[in-house]
Every structure is written in C-alpha cells, then in structure tokens.
Length: 398
Ligand SMILES: *Cc1c(COP(=O)(O)O)cnc(C)c1O
Image (cartoon, rainbow, N blue to C red; front, side):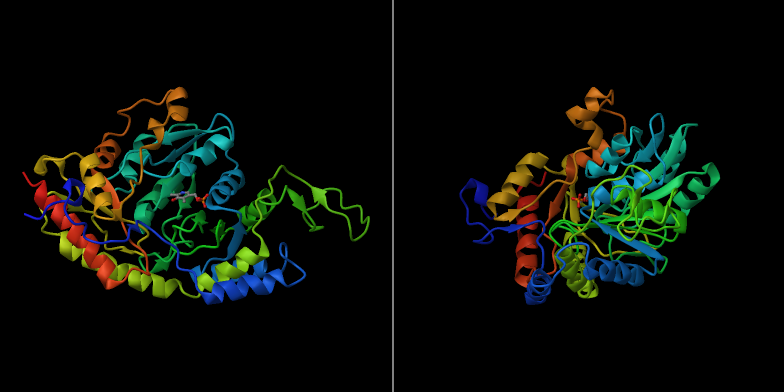
C-alpha cells in the first residue's frame, strides 16, 4: 500500500491546489483598465450594460447588480417586505449569509432540513415549518444543483410566501430547461472569486416582477429615486432634485467591476462545460470507491457545478473526517468543508437554536468535504485529486 504523505510518504503532487480558484484573463484586465481611464468609475454605463446582459443571459425581465451576494440577499429580503416578528425558512447547510439576511430585517430564520442524497432543502420539511408568521422561503442551490423548484413554487403559492432563491452557487444552471434566475420571485447571485464568475466582490438579483424590481433598485441605493413617477412630493425643483422615499443602503457595484463581470459573463458557457467535464470524471472515478459517497443529481437540473463534494461513509473507513482532510492537505490537495450548519454558530446558539434541529443536515455535515473544482484545472490536476482520494480511502479502508 502506498504510504500517505501525512505519514512521511511522497505527496501526489508538489505544489498545492485549492478547492476553488478564479479564472481571470487579459480581457478582464483590459476591460477594467478601460473603465479606470474613463470619466465614470462608478454609476456609469457599464453597470447598466452588465444588468442588461445578465437579464438577457437568464431570460429574466430585470437584473440589479450590487456590491456582493450578501447585499443581494439583503435587498431581496427588503423588497419582499420581510420585517420583525416574521419568519423566513431556509437551509442550515449553507453560507451564513442565507440566514443572516433575514436577521438584518429583524425576522427569524427557521431551518428546514435537507434531503440526505441531494443535500438540498427538502420541500416536505419546508411545509412542516410553515406557521402564520412565515413570510418567505430562501432556498439555496447547494453546490450549483437547482433545488426542487416546482415543489417549492407550489408551496409558496399555496401559502402566499415570497420565493427567494439563493443561487450564489448556481449561475449557469438550468431547471427543466429554464435558467436559474428566471424561476423564483427573486434570485440572488454572488461574484466572489470562488464562485463560477467573479468581479472581485459583487452580486446581483434577478426578477420578473416590476414591483419587486422597483423596490430592489431603491434598497440598493439609499431608498433614493430620481424618477418623478416614484416621488411622493415631486415639486419640480429642478434637475438636481431627488427624493428619499424609503430606507435603503449603498450596495452599488462600481463600473470597473461591472466591466470585469461583462467579460466573465462571456465565458460562462465555457466554464460550465469544463466544470461538467471534471464533475463527470470525478463521478466516474469515485463511484466504486468504498467509503466515498457522491452527491445525487436530479434529472431536472442541468447543473453548472460550483463545488464538488465527496461525502465520507465513516462506517466504512477507519479514519475520522478530520484525519482524511489533513491527509488530503498533506498530499497537497487542499479541501474545504461547506458548511458547518448555520445554527451551530455561537451567534445563533445565543438566539436559542440548539444542536439536533436538523438531523439530516448534521449527518451530512459530518462526512462532507469539497475537493478542487475550477475551470483552469488541467487533466493532470484532476488526476492528482482522484489519486489522492483513492490513496487515502484505500489506506483507511475497514
Ligand atoms: C458566497 C455565498 C453568499 C454570499 O455571497 P458574497 O458575495 O460572499 O457576499 C451567499 N450565499 C451562499 C450560498 C454563498 O455561497
């Protein structure tokens, strides 16, 4: 048996690779430089262009770009009218922002459990958690795979809830042939460097609803409008006049980020193709490795995968998840864990949430690990990752 690097053996590779990495080329550098030399580095034409292209790409009516994915979620909650005393149902297996956005609005996040095979929020568990205070559902397309849109849509219609999709992982994914971004009442995206496309920090919300769109615009720019039709007073003071008609934030994206985003948007289908190739290779390679469980895919989702998760079947291995993780690092393949269940964090524990709330999410959390997945990975990189997983799983096989 091959000696593990963590025990003094040779690592599968010399230089370390990480679970995710941006793909930025000369086109982005050129696009950003052009804006920096122009009169508008923020509130200029590139932001409007990026919004138009984003909406076109998804076939959505409106898109609003903003400073990051968390701001996108916050704006969506504001537009949904979420307020104190209300509840928002979301998943615990997500980045904290999916729940924090409800707390920003004074509402209470309620955690529904996940499906044990897809790791996405379970529609039945959403139903089980609805009360008279429930206002919205924030469903997360975990790893990029679409949630059960049809079932969640039905639940939201039945109970009059706002359906917000946290698609931070899922730009480029389609559900039943329709782009994510065009399915929920509002869909939120992130353009952080680990995500599928990036502009440093950035986010967006898409919607097909004109009323929500107006509210999103206000929320991301101080609640201020220059549009006379929206004004309450509209005293025709002159060109300089604007009105603050609600309380909003400064969540705007800059023009040089929008230029970078436009460049990345042009590459998304290539990124998706390469990500799918790598996912297929991993699925093939890990299908028959004892101790490794692969994520179940639903046929409705044509997935642009953001993360590749292996899940350790710890009953079939002699190691802990921690030992497997450290062994991967020593082989120079740096994994990451997505995510610690949100309500386990001290902030949420202080609010009264207790461990054991979502047994499936806690069970899945125990075994998961994200391994490298990004378009710039070479075939050799992919083979190294496969070799490391096989080597370690084989070593610790029961
Ligand atoms: C990254 C992420 C966010 C937050 O996006 P930022 O751009 O980092 O603010 C929200 N939800 C999920 C599921 C994410 O992965």
